[in-house]
Length: 194
Image (cartoon, rainbow, N blue to C red; front, side):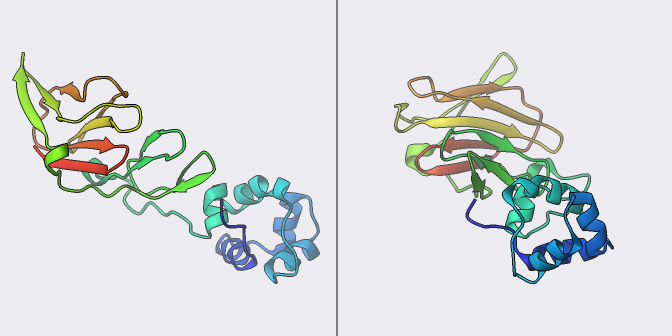
């Protein structure tokens, strides 16, 4: 993480929970003077207090460090608009049903933005036994490959993980409509409406 918690963030979140400095201090086992020092930028909470501090303020540690609280105003969430994240360190794929702060390997991940496919990443669609088979005419090398394909409709999110030196394709049952996403480890996320 690049950031560390700021006094303004602590104060804003504490006041948002209608808590006094003394009440927050009691929850953390510190003095109210310590909380006052944090909020006035005359000191910082010890790293061992980050998790209990985040818990007392009702947020996650990444939210505390970024200073941005994620508020899910759409509890029903629309899966078609749900974000995808890929860790640049380990390749982990994270899908969320709504807004989130996603982090992996100590890196806060930005949501991926899908692009229209170019010739190297074009989608080929075939139909077999009542299912669709989608493939991409792409080299699959250890340093350049399609990492995953995902078929997303209003009510489903089906993801198939792909591996270097494997086949760049996947089968999906046609649930009707939606989008097909695929991710190239060098060129990013692509999508096409089905």
